[in-house]
Image (cartoon, rainbow over all chains, first blue to last red; front, top):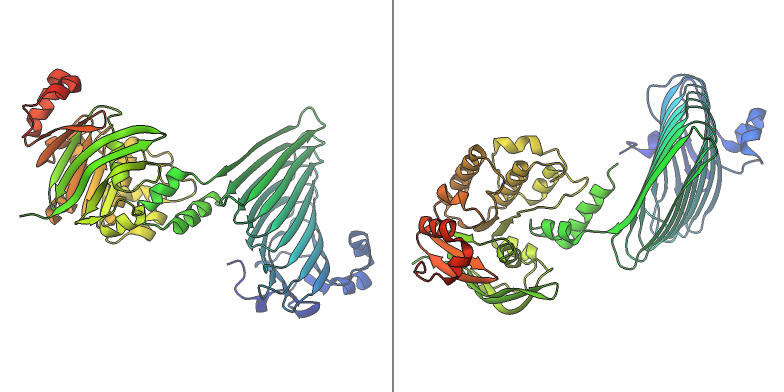
Length: 303
Length: 237
């Protein structure tokens, strides 16, 4: 578990209402509309005046993970969030972020546009968990800016997929930065579109992107994973898809664009089905077919 | 009289449209140790896989009975629940799954194998040496608390010390507990440690010989090869 209880979250929103803000020393936490009013410098990041969402500004070292939780609890709610996280120079931080639906059939809409600014020398571990209902539409669009020497570990996992997921992540990597992006995408009775793009903009920037896609019953996944090397950096894409059911479809496009002759960017990609031999082996240990599939999938998703 | 635990009756099996087993008969009584010898590609491993219910193979005729009950159409997991187990000759690698995760799910009893401890937190069969794979297979099959275990080439690629240790474990955990054993072996090294009650010889998908004296069978095969063995009738009791 990334968070003991949502009640302890630093920012907790249910539907459109901010349920709780738990501010800590050295960290400013506000609903985004208030941040827009109070700190005019945030406007260049928000673009337009936000209706909802959170603003978190980390100004000092913190010894515990920041936690946010955005929940849909009522039927047919349409959230339109603008989130901004700014971490000042040389701070090491961890954030646990949960977006979820309280029930299975709320038919909610969750749009989230996020900007995350990691200033010089920052280290951030960002754990992003999704748990949605079967009829939800979810569209997060996160843009990370890694200033000189910043490091990012980004872990995304969708435990329960929504009916529609359109998920975009963009990373701008300046000089001497590094990013590790790990995406675990489960799809079941759902359509999923994932696009992650890393721009290696500064000298000696590095990235490793790992994508694990599991296509279960009646699911479609389209994934595009890209690295643009504009400076002499290094990058690697590791994209793997696993088809668990014959009604599932995965389309996977790894893309490398190199504009600098000193950059090194590579990729590996594969899509396969569950090995019959592995399945039989585990069944000959007494596991049912479903138990064996679950165990094989859990192994596949280990990063 | 001892109960017949496993009976394979006139079993014909196809794999990829090709006939592999051509009417195999075999039976194992409770507490018996039996050996199945044969050259490469004679159908020994196929027989083991079919007995445990591998859906890859098609049974075209014949049947398999366990404790008098026909199990020909049972799933592998159902057969395991009845008390059957198979130690694979070449077990598959399962990426990201530790041996301990499998054991947590399947164990019906605690088994102490000192050499296995270092394998628990490793991904199963991934970068395992030949010997480690055998140890892992033995540990998994023993932890199922079976009534019948088929060991498929458990002695291949093992040095004498390891073979002795494995034989000791099998004696302690299975033979003393009256568990029936079918030892499938190409070279027959394990038979010197676990002396079988009966030895069968399979060539080209058929059982061609059943003998009491495994030493005599091994000597004959060593001297004349399996080709000669095909013609040999005097070994059969």
